[in-house]
Amino acid sequence: MFIFGMKKKKDSSISKYSYTKQAIVQNNFDLQEAILQIKNGFYSNNCTDLCEYLHDDNDKYMILADYESYIQTQEKVSQLFKNPLEWTKKVIRNITTSTKFSSDSIVFRQANELYNL
Image (cartoon, rainbow, N blue to C red; front, side):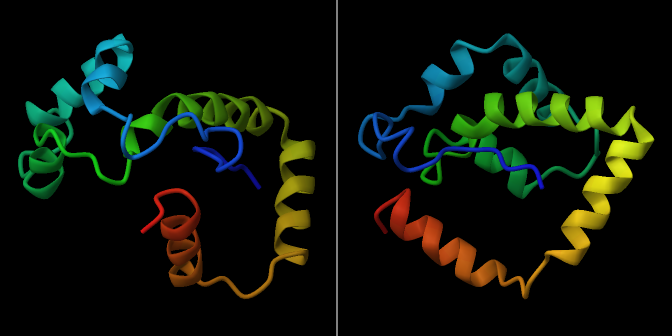
């Protein structure tokens, strides 16, 4: 399993009070490019909710703070995928050790732990 994003203890310096979307975007050229491509319809001609969210200054869930972690994790995924034997082992391990998954409980836990909501 690959996990990315803010973790409560590690990222306690970023809070909903000190976080600004503009600072995250200004310091990451690749993120600026991705947002511009989304806004300009590069991936879809019908970009409504996402475009509004990206254009809005309020990123209350601090989604853009996870961007760099996502990119680093995706690189690990890409490297592992190049090794079919190790990829297959990881897939089998994930399947055999999986338990009931509830996105509701994860969202609730993140809301409490990360965002103090």
